[in-house]
Length: 213
Length: 213
Image (cartoon, rainbow over all chains, first blue to last red; front, side, top):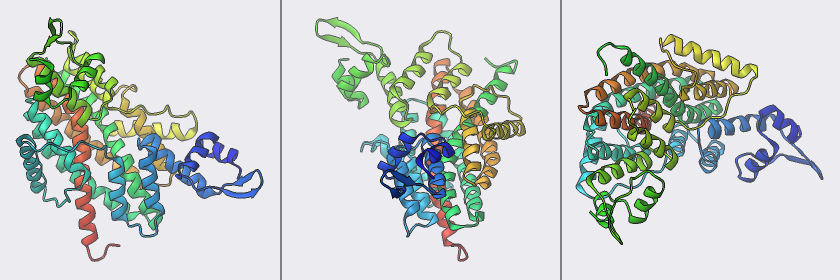
């Protein structure tokens, strides 16, 4: 199909398709004449995946490029794919300082991970974020909020097991790899969105109670 | 205290303090001489809050400004504060199209919300994101991942109730308002970070099973 047809089928504009090609996210089409380039069904599918990662999942062009390169890599595994997708979806967080505040927060996070029985490398992108959050809660006198981290962690553990079980049931390796990416990137967006709706509902119910402020 | 002392106490550089003041995030100090401006303890606390929202929570300057304006508003309530914080932490997502794909996704989300017994306004920032996610999963033939939305929703519901209970126990109104902001903005970051660690652990455990790929 010509680029116009590809645009129509995917809802992505021709200039955007050209931009994704220049940035290496979308493979170039097959040149069949001086002014003619042909695109295949695989381009339709890849464009839908790019849209999902960028427009729905919120990845940057660079982060989406890293994920797609791993999808295309011959040595890819589901475990490696999860790691790449996790890094892509995690915002870079500043290195914590070296003072006592950080050491305390670091110890609290290590204790939390131990309580869940988790084994995780210190390079895991979640680790540093958690240390920053614990330090910020303590610094702002909101230590009560730290009590939420254990229920968050328990929920995250159950959901991670459910996610891997679902991905395990996807028939093809291609499907598993793509499922790992979408489950991580769009799963994060889904959890955030569901928290928005659940919080509105819980807050409204609390307001309706006669004795609340 | 002078601006240098404020920078030392908070770890925020003098140019960044001046930038936050120009952008209206930090109230101006008290001018006590031609080249002297004095800052109070309230500035230390506000700067720590700004750092937490921007550096740890990932809010833009504009989004942090909206949250801080609501914190400072005389008519603020905990319920209203939660709404403002939710909007600030939610990325703008494109309006879904009008074709059948979106109508189906919209109906699936409405059914999911109904199953949880939730009441939420269609303006809730989570709603549109969920419609986009459901449409993307269907479009990419990853309908199996939709099975994760109910466990995500159940977890989100339990966590929202726990969050409001914790905020309800914070003694002062100032503390409750700030807790609502931090619980929403940093709570999202915490859940994402814990998902990273839980996913690494679950993926590793699955790899170690003798019969897995």
